[in-house]
Image 1: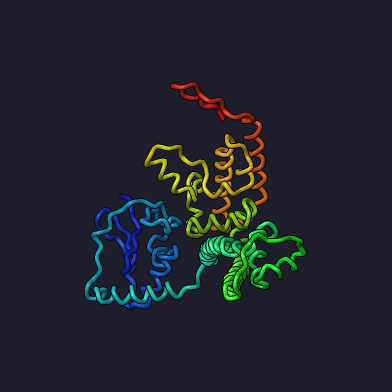
Image 2: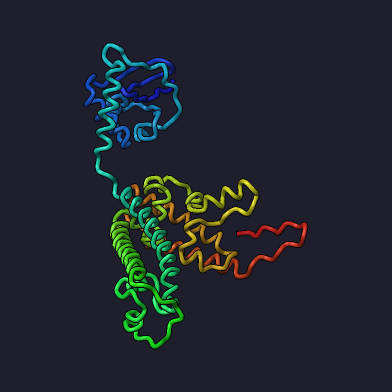
Length: 353
């Protein structure tokens, strides 16, 4: 009969069928048990589990124990703690201490990057909204400025000078504005808004620099294959490098296209061919009929890169990039022309790859 290794909150057990043949019960001390459960949650194998298995061939009930045996399903509901030593009060105290232990652990670097990317997205959205409002408001006074300055420069000129006369002098222009005159009180309000927008642009630049500096040590293979910005955004969409490394290439290809996918499932519209991976130059610069194959090839390599980065598989980014570029050339050679439209009522013939 096959033996199964099972770990509960109060100990580790070796079972055959519905009986326990050997066990290692944890000491009835809340701190000791909490330390062991924290290691379990981090994916580590306990000493008690190694001791139980020894040289035996067993099946295991959790993926983290896969070094000790092949994972499988096992109903361990028949195993219960001894109420005299491991009662409900002890379990409650263990869970409280476990929560304190886990919340006090240092964050993984990719978790900080996820928050930084989301913060950057919020900053970009805020900058765009304020920039639009500033153009609309200041455009009443000096509409021609939009032809000579953009984004941060536009806001900076307004924050420094306010009135159009100072801006015209700063830019060295010779023109007569068609805008309306404004009171000093109104211009001061616009200057304050422009200064706030300048500060937001500066904060955005600092955050972009932070992300660029910190993403490469965390995901060097992804950065080499994609680029630091796109790699960071994919990690953010997945919720972390660990989660990204567990996704199949087909899911990774559609990250960021969830709305289009649900629209396809709801109303039977065409499914999306790519998500945020579309931002890669090889995808968005390609003709429309090649993008699906190219994004699929890129997603396959990105899935390998994410696993290498997450599990410490060394640097192979240059090799993956070379393989991807070779695949892109092959796709362009195979499909140089757009597919012919099928006649009405006839299905288009599938092309061999």
